[in-house]
Length: 202
Image (cartoon, rainbow, N blue to C red; front, top):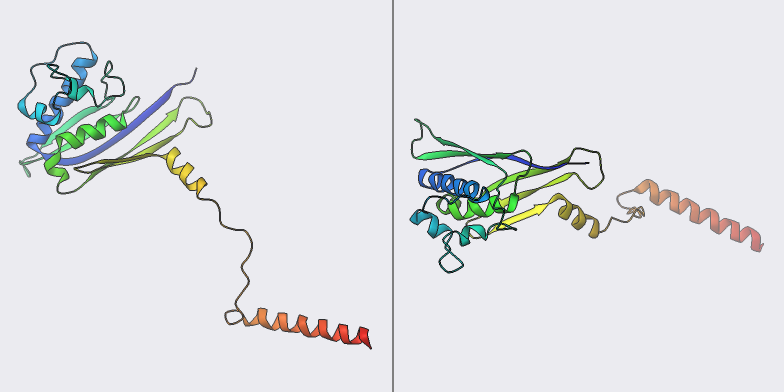
């Protein structure tokens, strides 16, 4: 039996308020995935993940996941601020087995609007397998902007490159100006061919 792993580890900076919102979101994900009721959401959480289904206060957050019954991020969150930069938090997000690129990217986009207004955030992830099976290795990259997420797997990038076609293998004809040796050779072959024809006609 083969096991497939999705892994990533990346860091970025954000405000302390954004760090607090990220921590709340990761905590909510863990509670809901374990079928536990999280503490009441903060106003900032509800603003970032507005409910999409009536009175279900978690519905907006659960909409991030392919399967709302399993709202798992597959990653750990750590970090904080420092004495040198007390107003800035450094965030580290990492996972080694079941990292969820899309859910994490959209979560960052919702929680870090102020920081994303200054600069985008990006990360890469890897896909590996416990057995050497074709098609089971790859990864991808993700660029997060304030208004969108641009994400692509290596499989998609490879298919795009293959679909674009390959360059012709036919060697281009040299330009006589750029290659005088080739021009002299062609001239010599032309003269020899003319002489042969004249000799044959005589």
